[in-house]
Amino acid sequence: MSSIILKTKRFLYPIEIKKHISCDASDISAFKQLDKIADAKRADGCVVCMADDVFPITKTDRAVGVRYL
Image (cartoon, rainbow, N blue to C red; front, side, top):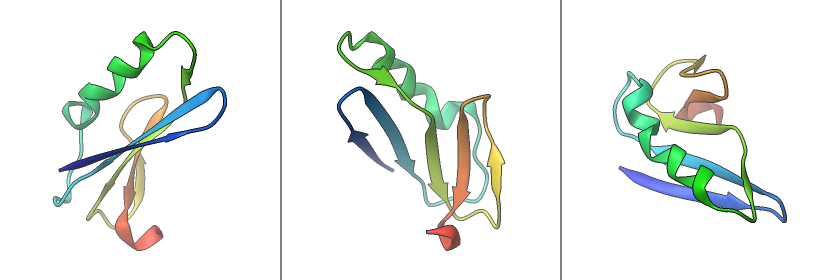
């Protein structure tokens, strides 16, 4: 498992990389830690995984199959 955070002037984009097919809310549990950073807002995040499609995990976070990269 690996984590990446892309940062722009105002936003943090969390990305989690997994080696499995199924993803759920436990895969993005660390994303909420970014909400504690005062000078940047957490944007939509994603989990890159071995899934065949793109699907929602939460209202703002998605699982993205590696083939879409």
